[in-house]
Structures are given as C-alpha cells and as structure tokens.
Image (tube, rainbow, N blue to C red; front, side, top):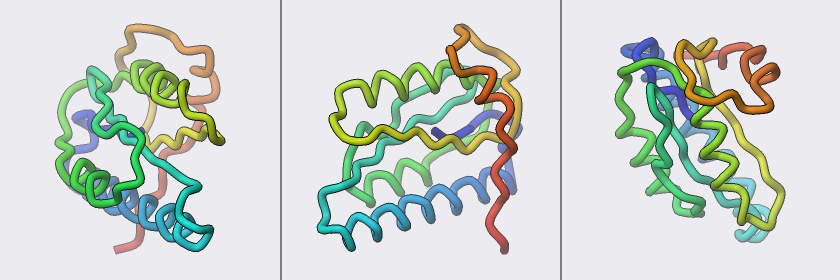
Length: 130
C-alpha cells in the first residue's frame, strides 16, 4: 500500500519508489529461494482515493512498472487503501500481509477502518540511503 498523496511530491516520491521496488525485489528473491510459488504481491496506492493498481501477481515487471508510474497529488485517504487491501486479500488462501509505506497521518477519510488506531500510530518509513 503506497502513499501517492501530494505531500509525497519530489524527493519523498523518489524514495518511496526506490524503497517499494527494493521490497518487491527482496520478496521476489525470497520466493525464488523457496521454490517459486510462495508469494504473490499486489499494489494499492492512495491519495484522495485509493486504487488497486496491480491485483495479486508474481510478475515483478508489472509491479515495478506500476510503482514507477505513481504520481504524487491530492489528499491522504488511508482508510480507502485498507478497505481495498482487505478486499484484495479476501480470496487469497495463503498467509495475508499488508505493508504500508505512508508519510504520516490521514488528512481525509471516507470510512473508518477497525485498525485506524494502529495504522495512524505507525512511524513513517525511513527512506533508503542515497
């Protein structure tokens, strides 16, 4: 779940993209070492609205292209992203994990997920070193 709100413009978005692609690479490498069929990833991004950019897949090129195509603009609606992540993972039979790369507190929400207390207490991700 990636934050593409307006506050991510410039350097924060560059760091987000680099960190997200590195995360995809780490998971892909772990998957290859374990035989190749253990992990699938999807991409949900959010600003004023949340979107499912890539449904669950094992295709690293599709994920990285979607990450690279993100543009920062709009408000922050984390709640919508959590709702879409829940819907994406609902039919998945394996272990379900959602990882969020935000930069802070939501400024606008349409719905309040049950996990807002925990989601908004997370520290922002540390950007990778240059």
